[in-house]
Image 1 (tube, rainbow, N blue to C red):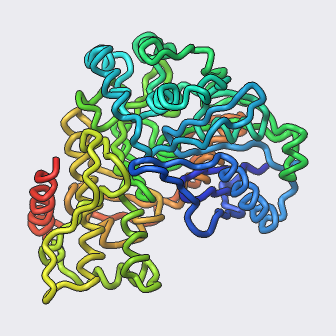
Image 2 (image 1 turned 90 degrees about the horizontal axis):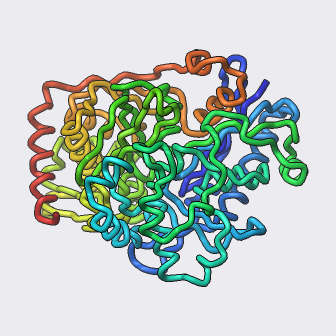
Length: 493
């Protein structure tokens, strides 16, 4: 039996097919091959057309069918991972009303800050575990205040993965984990966040049916089966935001375990069984994929918007068509600390870790007679790692400590400079595994459909590919470089 995983990112849509019996990856593809279009009508805005996700899903799925030669009726179930915090609005006909306001759009922060003050900070934190901030509910408030004619058409709101599940099955649904990432779930009352809906002037009727994260949530409709070449017997049985799903893909499910990823944005995600939140909401607490009121599993999430996107930008600007491997080789010729060049990587919108400030990317210390592109490339990777470490210090202050960090061997973790610097400055051992978000979603589908009887069964063939220990001989060099980086940051916050 075969399991299909779909990962809806902001850069691309990836589809992977695994053999459920042994967990082997049979085929995988992503589209578009260049980064997916993000529209920014104003500074700090970011929107995508949900139809773009769907069209790229179809292309990737076509590749997977062509490469695997697997018959559609052999696919047991589908799991969906998706970019978190996005807002999709549909009318009574389930047609999309406007482009999705996605995760890195910062226009709604002012509404979240106002609600935090009006409801009361302590009340927000003890019930919602976060400030409403710039999350999905606040994005809907922005639409209500600025596009009332569109808001009036809203039948249901969804997160990006809910939209893809709706397209596949025709069922409009969401999950507690998804609602929590939109700051629409009250953990204290185990119910919808009525206190925030009342403040924003929303009816709870706009929230879809709530289903478990792992469950048979629907089956592929006849119309879509004909369009995609799937079977109507195939179930949709798992959905989760990309960071909880990344943790699942690494079998990070229990208190004290840490997962991280470094794609367009970067995340450190720690699991706790206790209520933990940052009073300033610089890191955020959501329901993990295996959370229940009786057995709490909460994910404490540090997000840095400007991660791989900085590396990609430098490749376009100064890379001269170099591969990322060649860029890493140039950077490796430069010493730790980049000979005084410092980069703050915050050029992809307002950063929650900086109290929703948008300070932009800052470059400091350039000497025209000394520095070359290798210095820029190393300083960028160090700056990204140091932003991780800055956030991890906040996580430590609320009791989330990283001694071992798990990641898929992908994106920035392909760079020896990146992973060695992260191990060196954090003191944590880095473990790299043979997985990614789409493979994790496929495993999740197997759990949700009942094909796997336990989490342990689903992850029996998860393989550790590499382990990176902190280099104690370079500890002082990393700490000095981080201190210089932090001093530059303090000038802007």
